[in-house]
Length: 125
Image 1 (cartoon, rainbow, N blue to C red):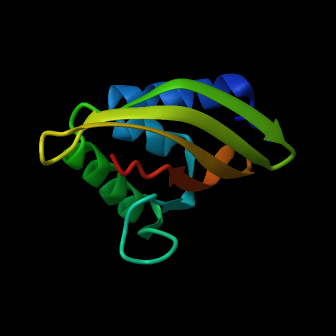
Image 2: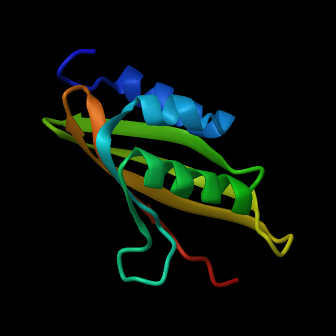
């Protein structure tokens, strides 16, 4: 894999999330990857570190939101950093429809994602 990440790579990463393909997602992340989820008890959400923990975090997202989709992803890259913006839609655990805008802020290393820091708007009504 090349030393840099392309917009095509981020499109493939987004598509893997929309397919709920955990193995494909993890193949695009470093062995020591970090996933900072947008939900959790801490101010930074729940932080998963390393392939095994990140797998658990991804699978928790898919278990919580079985029909989750990240719609209309738009990406930009600057050096070893990048951003993907999207509109998240899903059915919540309570059966309510969820639709919120969000983004991922990435740090890249060796042609893969080293850090995926996820942010999501919180709708109140």
